[in-house]
Image (cartoon, rainbow over all chains, first blue to last red; front, side):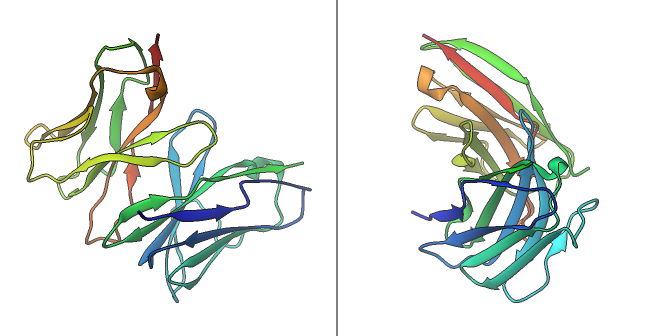
Length: 114
Length: 113
């Protein structure tokens, strides 16, 4: 089956620093990757959609300069939270989409900014 | 119009009982309706999905019922088990418009032994 590997699973960083989260599709090529943010007891909120080799499309209200998304290949997308602040603390989840496997989600990254 | 409304917010069911979660949508262009199960600290995992040309789909203990005219779909979990205790999300997407999933608000299911 399709597997999406997301790393790290948790990270603690100091306020003002940047954090990079990786999302890899291990056994398939993803036509599109999605990044979500989830607060405790809430639903998944789509942040952005990215296609390999092109700029990400951000949802309304998501700061593109703060949440940098790079989709370098059909199997790798990264989300960089720049100049992180405590309010950026959240659970970030990636999803990879392919024609054969539909949507496959990563295991998520718990970001805590102190 | 892009919203997917899910109910109930929380659900308590006895072991062996039937869990029923409902979702409603407005956008008739949606053409893919999946259900996801999420455990704390984990990403969502696909349970079962349906397309609008089918009224019902069953996989093991999980069944999706789809009512196109009412723009509603539901998840039934038969013979609910304590291990089914998790948060369940319905979602919808339009395949030929980028395919982004719109999620419902989630239902926290607790199955009591």
